Each structure stands twice: as structure tokens, then as C-alpha cells.
Image (cartoon, rainbow over all chains, first blue to last red):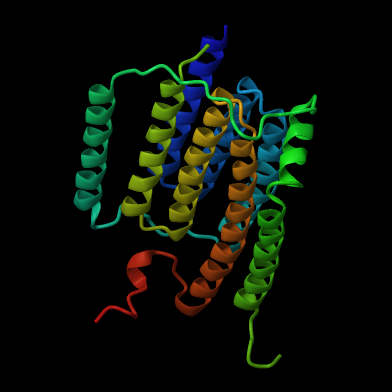
Length: 169
Length: 100
């Protein structure tokens, strides 16, 4: 049963990610990415990361995708969008990486995952969100604060970049 | 139980697709979308490892990656709007001011 769900999600994720790159219209690409985000969230649920699934839908599908669609519709693009002229280069690099990945997996073989007991086991937490909160606010407290600083810098930077006349302020 | 390598292969496929998209497309918006694809591929990796090693730290890192992705989108789209104002186009072939 779990395998059926995994293969469904994996198939849709792979197909929509190819569509994101292949489709001509940026709006269609963004909508394909939306479908992909939902299926990634489903994959998280099968991996018992329910909190991240909810955050994925709220942040990615709710905020980031809406921002993309807003900008695409604001710019109102009509011109024909063709592939970049360095596409043979992209093909060569992509094919090289694919071959490398295949060789690595064949050489390494299909090793079973070694289950190690991590240093931060989910001790005393019953739910997924509780476990994440425990670790986030104790071990990773400083990176958490840095993340808030990053968001502040991004906010100020976006406002300054998108403002019309920066010299007047 | 799905083997861990399946998740890694899926993540590799998505990452490669995003990588090729960055190199291949001319539309800046699609390039940013491809960067999102790559970030999602790494997130899938993180969550899969977190589940298989029973360590919740991987999910915390996904949380941070999500923060960085949100910041990247905000700044990137602001840059796109500024570029569009300057050139009235968002094809990257048009922006070659730094090329000699």
C-alpha cells in the first residue's frame, strides 16, 4: 500500500517537474509547479512528516506560488519564449550528470539503509510538530534566529528593489 | 517499506530537471521556478533521511530551507520587476551589460 502511494506521488512529481521546464507559458509552468508542491506534501505525509506537509502547502502553494503568479500576470508577457541558445551545453551537462548518477548507483549497489540512532531522538514528544519544536527551540535556536534575520533582510531588500524612485526617499 | 534509494532517485530526477531548466530556459521566471524545483528535491532528500535515520533534525533543516526559499523568491521577483522596468523584457539574453 505504501509503495502504491509512493509510486503515484513520485510519478506525478517527476512528470510535473518536467512540465515546469518544458511548458512555454509561464502561467502553465507555475500551475504545474503547484501540482508538484501538493504531491510533495503528500510524499511528506507518507514519510510521517505531517507538520512539514502542512507548512509545504501553506508556504509554497499558498505564498510562493501566488507571488509567482502575481508577477507573471503583472508583467503580462506575450512574446514567444524559446529555449536558450546554449541548449546543447545544457543537454551535454545534463546527460553527463545522468550517466554519472547511473554509474554511481550501479557501482554502489542497492545498499539497505543503515538505521542509526541519531543524537537527537524524538524524546518525550508525541507528535511530529512537537518533536520538531523541541529540537528547533533547543538545539537549533541560533539558526532559527538567523532565519528570522534572513527574512527581515529579504523583506527590506525586496521593498528597496521594487520601489520606483529610490533616490527620493 | 519503500527503500531509501527510491527517494534518492526521485530527488535526483527532480534536481536534474531543475538544473537543466536553469540552463535551458530564457525566461527568468521559469529559471526561478527551476531553482524552486531544485530546493524541493533537496527537501525530499532531507525528509527521507530524517525518516529512515529516525532523526528529526532533517525536518528542521527543511524548515530552514523553506525560509531561504521564501526569501529567495521575494528578492528574486523584486529583481525581475526592476529588470523589467529597465528593459521591458525578461529574457536573459537581453541582459548582457556585464559582458564585454
